[in-house]
Image 1 (cartoon, rainbow, N blue to C red):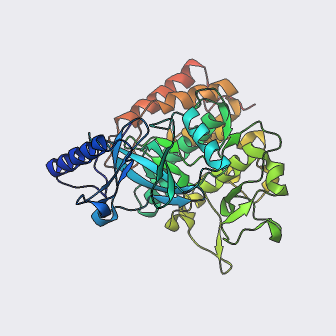
Image 2 (image 1 turned 90 degrees about the vertical axis):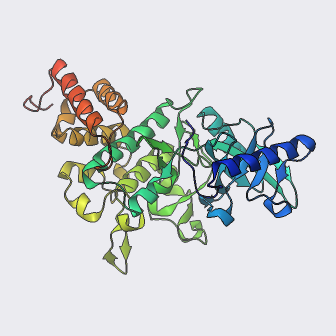
Length: 387
């Protein structure tokens, strides 16, 4: 699962990198109580930490172009590297609140953690380090660069919706727990080197069947905008779960955010701007306008009350975009059973599909053939009368 490619923030020269790593490991071995070796206190170019199980990791350093990957309510994330050049992501927190403990439990259940425990390091301040697999780069970055060709966005949309479906169905969890993410947005979705989609940042995740989930902070632009003034946080993009979100429930909150991750209708000085330019959503205005009316209606977030309907679940969204990938009519969804939708999406999930012309195209051809074979074997065609 870990990436093998070198990330920013680490020594380029492999031999120098190995020598420095060996020096850090030796220092930790000579000082069993030591848990962090700061570059500021040594002649090293990277800082190093020792996890509770003895694993030594190099922290990405800003003096070698290292950057903070993201900052959230529960901490900040950086790249780390082990002695074999595998890179991971580490979340650095200055507290260990109930919400942070909850996230650790969820990440462990989802098999996202390299280490099942947090490492507490006490220096000038207490810090808690949670080490996770490096699952890829954020969708937000892919969109804003941009790196995804328009013709392949159907694949990305389908993969995002299918990942949300699996999360809700308990398929991503060791225990079979059905989780709701509650903060779905491009910044919390990553694309790995095989163009697979992963959800990250589970600080607000809850059991999807929780009837009275506690108020959490979510990103308001991906949720209904009709909040009371006293529900708004100082940051205009943050809002506490209020009556409208309580009404939607955990699944509805994710479905609404999923739609807005695919297309976000936002305004600036009463004029529409292109949200994809800023990495806010997958489809640009022009791309959205060219979608079939059925899909545009499905992704419409103007009617909040429709978000929990059976025709707007992540599975329905994934199936519709899969039909578009295979150049089939979206009306086929009318004659597909629930089981057939699951079968088709599972078939499609097995292939590593391209997101640009530089990616291999064979898997797309293979997937399309498998989908058409399945439809043929089940006597499903575009000429069959709709139910």
